[in-house]
Image (cartoon, rainbow, N blue to C red; front, side):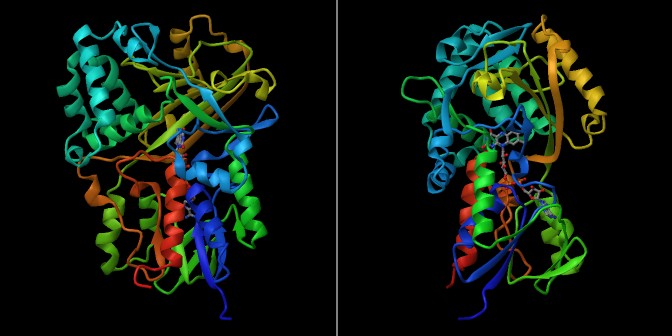
Amino acid sequence: MPAPKKILIIGGGFTGLTAAWRLSADPRFSVTLIESSGQLGGLAAGFPLAGTSLEKTYHHLFLTDTAILDLVQELGLEDKLMWCESSVGIFRDGKIHSFKTPLDLLRFAPCSFLGRLRTGLAALYLKHLKNWRGLTRQTAHDWMRRACGRSAMETIWTPLLKGKFDGHSKNVSMAWFWARIHIRANSRSGGGGEKLGYFRGGFNVLTSKLEQEIRRRGVDVRTSATVEKITQHYTAVVSGEEVPFDFCIFTGPSPAFARLLPTQASLEDYAARLRSIDYLGAACLVFTSDQCLGDFYWVNVNEPEAPFLVFLNHTRLVDKSFYGGQYVYYIGAYLQPDEKVFSLADDELAKLWLHYLLKIFPTFDPARISERHIFRFRAAQHIAGTDYEEKIPDYQTPLPGVFLANFSQIFPEDRGTNFAVREGLKIARRVSQPPNS
Ligand SMILES: Cc1cc2nc3c(=O)[nH]c(=O)nc-3n(C[C@H](O)[C@H](O)[C@H](O)COP(=O)(O)OP(=O)(O)OC[C@H]3O[C@@H](n4cnc5c(N)ncnc54)[C@H](O)[C@@H]3O)c2cc1C
């Protein structure tokens, strides 16, 4: 029996963990997984809160997330998954408006009546449209403005696009927007309400199970270790040490991969293409309190001057008994990585955001906060503009034996743990069964 081929997986998010899970089942491979942070889970990583684990950034699953739901089943974790009733509101004109049902849309007073009708028709059209190809080169901003009118843009769509894409909001492809609406609308259960999935014990239940299983199968899992370079000659430099491989899979952001490549003229065009994929960062403030703030799980903050995009009452989705009876809240924003939010001290950022929360909930009492945490990620969301399809990098890179599998290759869907699992499985298949084998 020949010696097993060495596979080096870079990144311990769901893409890397799923690829490791699949490849480690094959005796032809010996797998090493390298993660630069001190823990696994990537953007879905958890932290200890009230005796359990909570994600640093808000997370839930949709009924349509079949790749991750199949994995959950394969790992025997179905009993850990709960499906909970979601509720969505929009904060606009000093008030939270329910935005759960078509009737709520018709009652959404900040928008003109015609704007509400046009928005309802546009949503219906996008829900049933199957072929999104014709939308790729149109911007969501222009398409939605034509379909829904100025009033709906001002009160609903522009704040959402700006909140999600900051300065890139006018260039986002309508195909990306179609996928958001299409998936969301089709994920609703028969009764019209939306059910979202969450794990008893948080997403860490899945991360820990994957870690436990891959370690049991012999995967060498190294956290707090960073890949600094990848060479032309089947080696990577990991925290100063040369590690040989037969195959390497990089699952971090595309521009970060460009920085690992050897500096040579033949790779310059490829590296420039990777660098041309823009990413936004994300910042989340999490706090617990004994004060109940509102009846909605998710509130989009659609006032033009708001300093953040979303306010979430996590304990409107998941019962507060999981968190020692405390309410759990998130405040979140997507921003350019050079925005001041990324350099402000935690106390200053908390002051800024919590002060604005008083506008949404005038009775909010910061003195009743029992725990507060702030998390920032610099590459949290790639920008899918109208020319995005041309930028998407292939799995196969110009370096022999080296593959790229990350969320910038997902289009038109938005990134998510479901697609991370799907990409992890795809890249595992690609490595174990090369196309011409
Ligand atoms: C605010 C926010 C909310 C979200 N909400 C949801 C949600 O509700 N539902 C959902 O399904 N998804 C959600 N997502 C998306 C989801 O978290 C991601 O799509 C998914 O976790 C991506 O997994 P990944 O493995 O592809 O990438 P990542 O999680 O980014 O993992 C890549 C890993 O590679 C590591 N790495 C990079 N470079 C190196 C290096 N040189 N050496 C070693 N390690 C390296 C990084 O540290 C990182 O851990 C959300 C994301 C954000 C930011």
